[in-house]
Length: 165
Image (tube, rainbow, N blue to C red; front, top):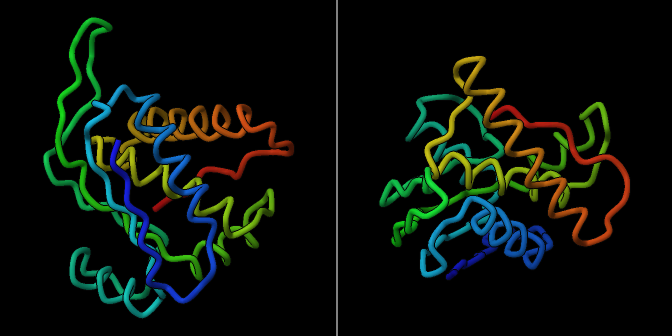
């Protein structure tokens, strides 16, 4: 899988963890190994501009996803996954830091960015959380992926609570 992480935020983030959890999520969702993903980390001002431009909403947000080829996970075990460009995930570490501090299970900015990376991947794959059943499915997958990734690395403590974007 080709995954690029580009930190333009001026904030130090664990780029390797973002790369690793994105790869883990895509593998777990059975996305073709030759697919491509871009993760961009930007500051609050840049995120606010994207949020206004694309969502017509004020202020910065935590994560935005911009799908390209609208790839979807295979629905059958023997189905060959499609190959292509997944798109871009844009993360804002300043918003992630605040969310981690304000969460019921307080956690670090990097843990929040890992959760948001998985959230962004799921959005690129067509998952959403507008309706209660969609939310339950997406957040269940999100928790399973984050917990699986953390478990493989021997990370202890509670996983970050689901983020609503």
